[in-house]
Length: 151
Image 1: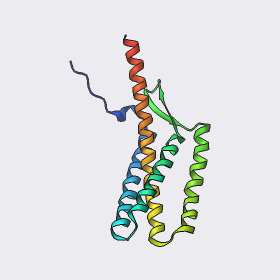
Image 2 (image 1 turned 60 degrees about the vertical axis):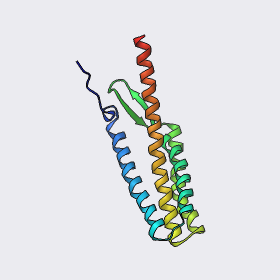
Image 3 (image 1 turned 90 degrees about the vertical axis):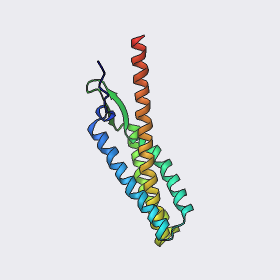
Image 4 (image 1 turned 135 degrees about the vertical axis):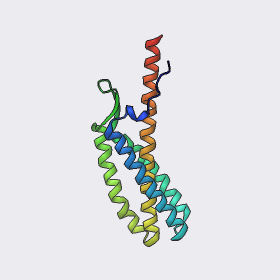
């Protein structure tokens, strides 16, 4: 008798799965737009790389907005916003609003648009990466608990 392999999607809350899908789609669109800006609009690739790196850093921190945990009743990973998440959310919103203002003082035209798009691509990738890291940690914690119960 073989055990049916279960999809990781089965263990994610529907809202969390939808959020990850939206972030993935947004990342793809923003990354393609960033590549377009570099390839066809004359945006400097160094600016794009630096903007994406800054965005990834902010996105990894912002991925902590929602605290992920295992729910024993539903047997799924659920997300909720705690106090630390609310504080991070406030700073994230300040960053997202002020980046346009700050970049607007420093750059204009293609450079302005390229930096904004690249930062957004980095932020979405960072949020996806941070969430994936947390999900991997939860999975390994559950596996170690299961192993401890078996032994």
